[in-house]
Image (tube, rainbow, N blue to C red; front, top):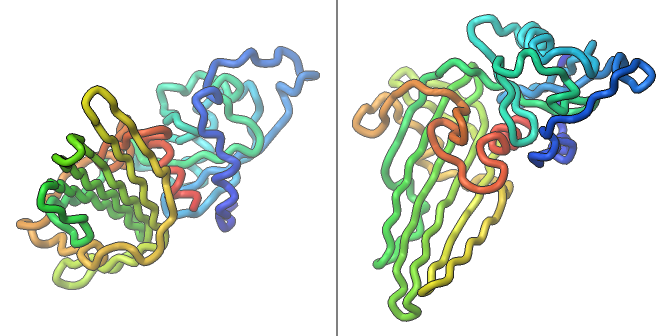
Length: 271
């Protein structure tokens, strides 16, 4: 059944790699091996489904079937994000216990089949302009049913001659919302969830330091150019085909830092 997602789900998701270490599973019913439990599975739209009838020795393929039925999803394969790992059909014969899927866990469903993705390269209007800096921005947008997802990355490099230092930074924006398409092919997007992450590094002679803000919620911070998407204009937007999540990339944009692509998908789906 469906119910409204709550931001507190994020606190329940275990993001550490240790959650995926192979475990010594109980061998007897007295240790809870046969005890039935439920997990929550979120879609990228934010809808959450409760999946029951699981136990420690149930194989992952059983969970995939249950999720596909709950989502009425029959046209392509599904993957489930748990913590910092993407679980796919490759894990089908592993058990819930082996994968760390236990009662109360929250997973995020993603399509493993490719989707049309629209790419924009150029200034979007909020870059920090500096005479000695270079900015390189790329924006990727995907439409999933009534839901739209946006990933933006701006790479900035600046040389500070006075301190003999070099500063490089990557600003990531991720957004989820709803859209309507006009007759001329402009997608009018309302971004309900907006998050930003900034990773910067400074090099001074033989030293190097990195700062990472982590994902921070933002409101009404998306530039106008990213609210009215002229995807019909092939001179501005390029259409290609790819997965929502592919390795450490989301919509083709590589996600650096702790958590990687899996954390991005969970952040958007469970916000």
